[in-house]
Length: 63
Ligand SMILES: [Zn+2]
Image 1 (cartoon, rainbow, N blue to C red):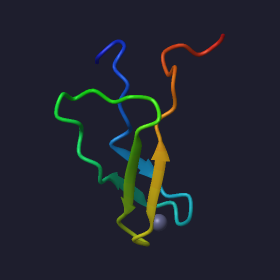
Image 2 (image 1 turned 180 degrees about the vertical axis):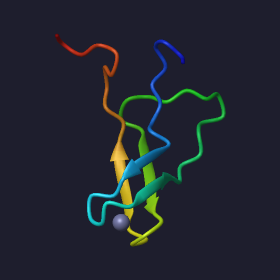
Image 3 (image 1 turned 45 degrees about the horizontal axis):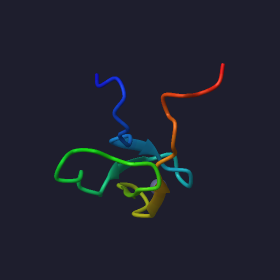
Image 4 (image 1 turned 120 degrees about the vertical axis):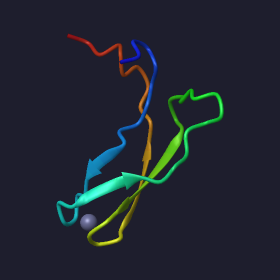
Protein backbone atom coordinates (compact mmCIF):
# COMPACT_ATOMS: atom_id res chain seq x y z
CA UNK A 1 0.00 0.00 0.00
CA UNK A 2 1.55 3.28 -1.10
CA UNK A 3 1.99 5.67 1.77
CA UNK A 4 1.44 9.07 0.25
CA UNK A 5 -0.03 8.28 -3.14
CA UNK A 6 -3.45 9.62 -3.83
CA UNK A 7 -5.57 7.17 -5.69
CA UNK A 8 -9.27 6.76 -6.31
CA UNK A 9 -11.27 3.82 -5.13
CA UNK A 10 -11.48 1.14 -7.78
CA UNK A 11 -15.05 0.46 -6.82
CA UNK A 12 -17.71 2.50 -5.05
CA UNK A 13 -21.28 1.93 -3.98
CA UNK A 14 -23.94 3.44 -6.19
CA UNK A 15 -25.83 6.18 -4.38
CA UNK A 16 -28.97 5.46 -6.37
CA UNK A 17 -29.35 1.70 -6.31
CA UNK A 18 -26.70 0.44 -3.95
CA UNK A 19 -25.03 -1.48 -6.76
CA UNK A 20 -21.38 -1.60 -7.59
CA UNK A 21 -19.77 1.16 -9.61
CA UNK A 22 -16.44 0.57 -11.25
CA UNK A 23 -13.78 3.05 -12.11
CA UNK A 24 -13.88 4.11 -15.75
CA UNK A 25 -11.01 6.54 -15.73
CA UNK A 26 -7.66 5.16 -16.69
CA UNK A 27 -4.78 5.97 -14.37
CA UNK A 28 -2.39 8.65 -15.62
CA UNK A 29 0.65 7.43 -17.49
CA UNK A 30 2.90 8.14 -14.57
CA UNK A 31 0.43 6.54 -12.20
CA UNK A 32 0.09 9.65 -10.11
CA UNK A 33 -3.25 11.18 -9.21
CA UNK A 34 -3.68 14.73 -8.05
CA UNK A 35 -6.31 16.50 -6.00
CA UNK A 36 -8.92 17.92 -8.31
CA UNK A 37 -8.57 15.15 -10.87
CA UNK A 38 -11.88 13.94 -12.20
CA UNK A 39 -12.64 10.26 -12.04
CA UNK A 40 -15.70 8.58 -13.48
CA UNK A 41 -17.54 5.49 -12.37
CA UNK A 42 -20.17 3.40 -14.08
CA UNK A 43 -22.77 1.50 -12.12
CA UNK A 44 -23.16 -2.05 -13.36
CA UNK A 45 -26.76 -2.20 -12.17
CA UNK A 46 -28.46 1.06 -13.16
CA UNK A 47 -25.76 2.17 -15.63
CA UNK A 48 -25.59 5.58 -14.05
CA UNK A 49 -22.35 7.43 -14.38
CA UNK A 50 -20.76 9.17 -11.44
CA UNK A 51 -18.11 11.83 -11.70
CA UNK A 52 -16.08 12.49 -8.62
CA UNK A 53 -13.27 14.88 -7.87
CA UNK A 54 -10.33 13.59 -5.94
CA UNK A 55 -10.11 15.39 -2.64
CA UNK A 56 -6.87 16.84 -1.42
CA UNK A 57 -5.02 15.94 1.73
CA UNK A 58 -6.34 12.43 2.01
CA UNK A 59 -3.37 11.61 4.15
CA UNK A 60 -3.60 14.77 6.17
CA UNK A 61 -6.90 14.49 7.93
CA UNK A 62 -7.24 16.28 11.24
CA UNK A 63 -7.62 14.14 14.28
ZN1 LIG B 1 -26.74 2.16 -9.63
